[in-house]
Image 1 (cartoon, rainbow, N blue to C red):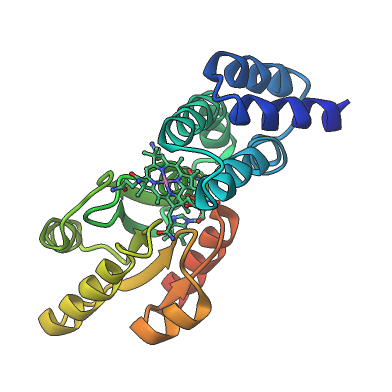
Image 2: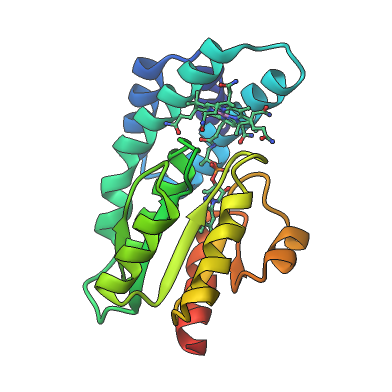
Length: 214
Ligand code: B12
């Protein structure tokens, strides 16, 4: 039953149909399927397919926008249950999170924020297209343990390096973890980030390791 539901979810992203994606998210929740599984097995294949089609010229910006909206709407239905499943406990650490300047991709970054919050971190999500100066001001203001930087474009990944360089210059004691579709292990080593994960579940593991290491 879930395989069929997941296929319909993938299709709703390909169709850019937010009404259908939302209905399916509600249906899956009432069938007792876990939110993260719904996102990973239901919607992500659709987002990947639209992204790949866009990359080779088989889809255009309106399709990308509509797929993004359908994904965002479905995640909005699923997020409250993800947050609710996190139990009240000692704060594991403070995380300032944002998508770097010049980049407006927010879905993955927000998912990482939700997972961190539900795992016991105090998250300050500054949103998208955030200038380096604003990021570092927040880090200092809240005395953050970790700064999470999302970048979805090869042209904006360089901002992750800019932020890390600026942290070193100012001598700030904050760990930096990076992510986003184009980010690779090689890039992470090159910019000397403290941690990286390719998904939101891994982001929580890395964050836990980093606060342990601090
Ligand atoms: C939806 C989408 C959009 C939407 C975004 C809507 C929104 N509100 O966020 C819109 C339409 C606005 C958009 C715009 C553009 N996009 Co776009 N977009 C996508 C798409 C299809 C999906 C992204 C997404 O939401 N994925 C779902 C989430 C859940 O996954 P995720 O973001 O990867 O996040 C996960 C991990 O990466 C990781 N993660 C993410 N952040 C972080 C942070 C940390 C700290 C950690 C540890 C982990 C982590 O965990 C997340 C959860 O598992 C991708 C294709 C793709 N395959 O990624 C293209 C894609 C990213 N876009 C692309 C492009 C080119 C653009 C535009 C330049 C198009 C244009 N010509 O205008 C603009 C750029 C606008 C800008 N300045 O930012 C290219 C980038 C190519 C490149 N290599 O640079 C892609 C790859 C499509 C492609 N194959 O060509 N886009």
